[in-house]
Image 1 (tube, rainbow, N blue to C red):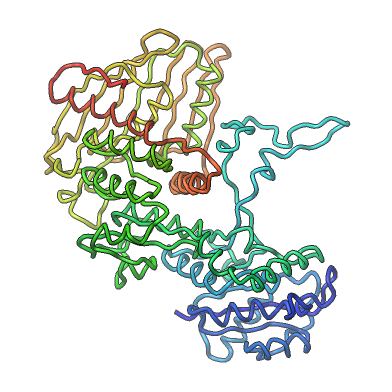
Image 2 (tube, rainbow, N blue to C red):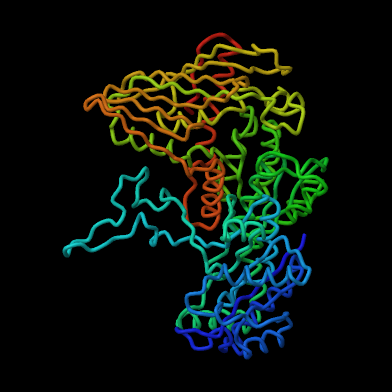
Length: 593
């Protein structure tokens, strides 16, 4: 694959005269981008596009190609950058070169490094995206949900529409991202001409830190960049300090969910995270986000991961956090070893298939003050957050019933492998609908509280070749305002097309959430009006990104875990009571201890 790095640097500049070659920490501003591009291991060639002979000479001194001077009509104040990029690509094509991807590198991003370029391009290629663009998290106090405006001398919220979250509670406000220049913008060449745009249908982010995202546009920006560069270069401990701020994580399990978390971690942190993996057997396919196999590459090479076949050896590397993404029945031994090693824990749901070892894990976590997070990502779905808000606001009145369904054809979950060998299908690996499809138990806990008891009917009812329950209905007895509240949850491995819905009925209204339609409808019994809330721009991976960003904020000490070990245990106890009820045929009290 041929990837061209293009540095656009015209001579005219209003804010800072001759900005692209103005001195910055003793070097021309342009030099920092040239150096980063030339150190990249992914770029086939680096070109400088300029109309200014002085800038061209600086570029040549820095070692990049300057094969032409840009025409005057492409160097005006109002010239769109897309036209400059298309001109450079056409010039290359006229010379017989056929680049696949062009990477725009603006000189005004001097803190961007070669590692950022390589990681962003790797992410683009791994995901099959049309475009990758660098972004940085928007400070929470600058979120549009929190901005204020002055009207007629009065201060009021800029965002007037109702919000499905508390705008004053920092951890509930969605994390937003802004382009940081952008420092990195890579596009597949056909998109560039077919769309007359850098942006195709599939755009992925590459997240950079605020400190690496300075975009030099004003004299103040220049002073800030100068201070950052000078501080890093002059401090004898700069490298050690930088490394100490890096995150080192260990993954135990790199199946589909493990690889999803790795991709999201790379998207959020880029090269600022070192990823290790404990893999007893190794092997396994590299998966694209659409669950197809990416041939000809190993998991380790695809994600730049250091593998270990021994858990103790991996933990001796002192990871900051351990991601436990192996089968349910194998969670606790890894979690206990990681906690003993002092690592924060990100545990795929459920925590385990039984309570053996749970008390010891709780004691270790509390003694060492470790961050724990259990990966129930549906709490980060805007639809369920809206339901939670409506219930808390009393819009449904007195709650009387809830009906929840999750049905999906098991052989279609991972089409690249034999479903009969996967852990959802095998009892010894903690499989079964009641142990695997546990998101519904968790968000029922979140919405309605811990139930008093559970009664389950069902079992292995289909012709699927599994030794676990594949279709069950669970009746939970919860309490709401001192009265019984029945919650019905149906789970199965069978439905085609899949179904995932949640209906909550109250004496003042009814709400229905349909995951696959990305829609919530709320009917108000008093007004006889129905509200429709659609989430057309919602992507399933947004939930995983949300939980990952939250976990990282918890590790940094900026937030408190929304689903910590204790909350995860409460969710698990609902599932265990449902399993016991299925086995005994009797209602089972849910452990409230």
